[in-house]
Length: 60
Image (cartoon, rainbow, N blue to C red; front, side, top):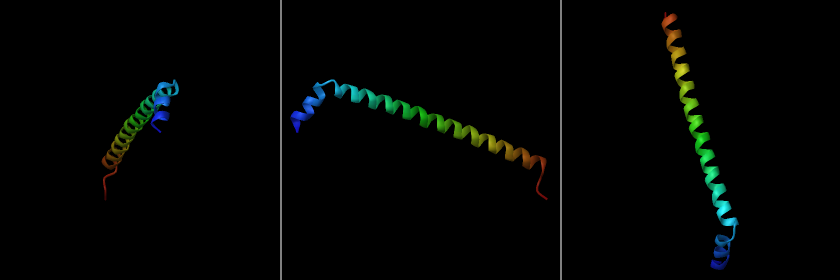
């Protein structure tokens, strides 16, 4: 088992797999961050619309 791990680390496949994993992690962080920002902006927009509607049409 140890020999296979050492062979994997010494070959070119090991560093390539690590590079792909790092790129995937960076892409996922970007996507999750973008979704969070867009979510907050959307929530702010809805809250603003709600407050304007309530200001324009007060409850009876």
